[in-house]
Length: 473
Image (cartoon, rainbow, N blue to C red; front, side, top):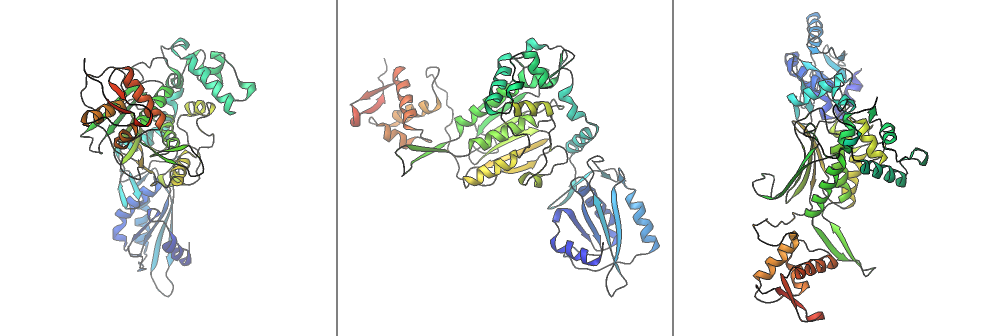
């Protein structure tokens, strides 16, 4: 380390990987910052430079060197910190440089028995949940959960149809070679490392359980449609316990039911072009990530899918795994998988790529649609993805109703529009009043369903045809 290198770091270094202190009197504050860097990706600390990046320098004595040696002993485990004393040209003062390297094998680190995190905005104490998570990773417990035996459960408790569906999908998409294709349940389980010595492991239950037992409280999803993130007004809610593919299917259905669709006519073709408020492929990718990266060693907490008027959020239990940071998610990064077996089955089914890159695909899909960039963040107990709508979406409140069973939300809205109108309306007039009008064919199907139920009546024919509420009998 020399003076020119210091100048380069001051000019080009990242805020979260550099900390400046004017004097050695601020060594305790520097220790917290260095601890935070060690728990992320390392960095540099300087004594003798102000926060405004002005070089001041400091004197270095034998007492100073002794104090800094004792300072390094305040970290646990002992860190990879190199201390450089760089003389300032034409001066008798020095800049003290601390170069620290993060080690995934040793993390998490503490300073004076407390863990810290370094962010763009400064240093803060590490949340207890995050610290416990890193400790579990360190000893391998969070990774080992899926390989533990599913005591008390047998192959008869698994959905063989879902397993065959996985093999057929993988064969069709090329993720399962023809020579590895089989329809024998035991061979499928063996191929995906889901059974050992005739005993199922936890991953097998998460993936293929027919009826998810209460023992697996982790396999649960909560879904809600709210007006805003206060969640004071609930427009729709659903929750379910099930295997990974049942959870994925339920989440996709909930998103399709609540994400609005806009439509326009392409001048180069006669067909109507429909477009959702968010790219469904990107949302699906985020849901899959929540399922395969969940920390299943923690029985409490659920996957949560929340739709607000301005955003869609997906939260799962478990922080980023294997030393990944939020910053790395937007660039090429190594694939870190907490649940190897669960991930491998999703790959075999053609739902994910072997080399990862899911977060970058999410960002690109939204960028291609000129949508706001999705935000990734680590919460106290897990990981959050937030998609922001370009424009707020509308919503219809659920109201008590004695309508026949099987009515769809749009059909309830149609009845409400007709009930508020003093005269019959054409399909076009009704479509203009709907919150999120669907394709013409879908709307026609809604009217035919209402007519079959005897709730609406058609007056006139062809272009003069209009709809009204049927007379009560």
